[in-house]
Image 1 (cartoon, rainbow over the protein chains, first blue to last red):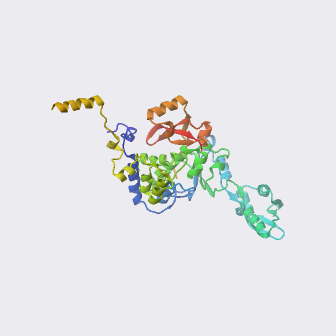
Image 2: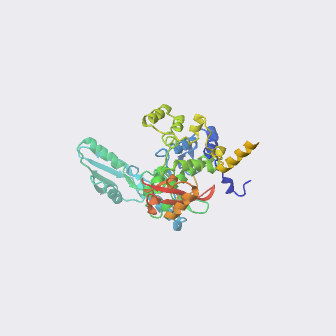
Image 3: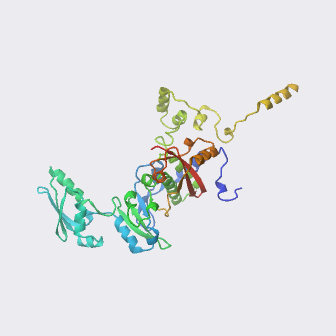
Length: 350
Length: 74
C-alpha cells in the first residue's frame, strides 16, 4: 500500500514501464474520435484537439496546424488593462491590406496609390506617416505621403511581372505587430490578471516585446519552444499538451505514462518522433528494428555492414525465443565457487 | 488551451566530482544519461561545455525530482 502520493509513483526494479505506458495510452486511444476542431471556451482561439493533435505531437510535425500562444505580461502590469492592451497592440499583426480602402496600381510607370481607411487607422492608432516609414524599410521602394490618407509607392522593376509581385508584397506587408500572429485576444483570469491568447506563434519576436514575461510564454509549437527555451521546456510542453488533449477527450491517463513518452522523445537533446524515423528507427538492435517496420531493408543493411546484435532489448529476445531481460528475467543467479564445492561434496556423501 | 505553465525548470551545472558521484549512484557511464545539446538555450545560459552534467529540478504530477542531462556537441 502506498504511503503518500509520491510513493505511488515508485516502481519496482525491472518493471516493464514502457509496455504498460503503451497499453495505457493505446487503449483509450482506440476509443478517441477523429473529430479535430474545437473552440476553447469563449475565446475564439482555434486549435487542433483530439486524436489528430496527439498524432501531431508524437509524429513531431515541424509546425502544428493551428499554432497558439499564451503571453503573460510581467508581474507589475499583469492587472493593468491599459498596459496589457499596449502589449496586445504590439502583438497582433496588421497587414497593409487591412488598413486600406482600395488601391490603384500603374504597372507601366511603376506607381502604387494606397487609399487608407481612416476608421481602421484610428482603430489601430497609426498615421499615414508611420505607415509610410514602415513601408520604406524596404529600400527598393520610394514611399511618399501624398495626402493625409493617400500613400504613393514607386518601384521600377526590370519586368512588369517583378513590379506586380513587389506591389502584391507591399499590400501584404506587415505594418504593426508580430509576423504570423493572425489574431490576439486579451483574457482575464479569475484572479484579475490578464493574459493574451494568440492564434499563430512567433516566440522569437514576442519574447523581445517590452512588458512581456519573456521566459513564461506558452506556445504549442514544440520546435519553437525547443529553439528558444530548450529541450526541458519542450519535454514539458509535449507532456502537458498530451495530458490536456487526453483530459479534454474525457479520458484520464496517469502522468507517469505520458511523461515517459515525452522523455523518450527528448532523450537525445532534440525532438524525435515516435516511429520508424525517430525513436523506433534509432534502436540499436537489428532484430528490434526489423520486427517493427521495413524488415528486409534492415536485414540487408545489417548483413552488408556486418552489424552485431547484443540481444539486450525486449523484442529481439522475444523474436529469437530467449527470456527477456525484464522483471524476474533481469535477475541472474550466481553461486560462489566454495559453496558449489561444498554442495557437491554433500551430494557425493548421500 | 492549457492554464499557463512555466515551461522552463531550474537547470544547474554540476561540478566534475558531483557528476562522477551521480554516475556512480545510477551505475551508468556519463554518456548514457539523457542528452542536452551545448547549443540549447538553457545550456548556453550556464555556459556548459560538452562532457559536463546538468541537473534539472523537475516538478510534475509524479512529484519533485532531479533529472540529469549530459551535455553533448550539437
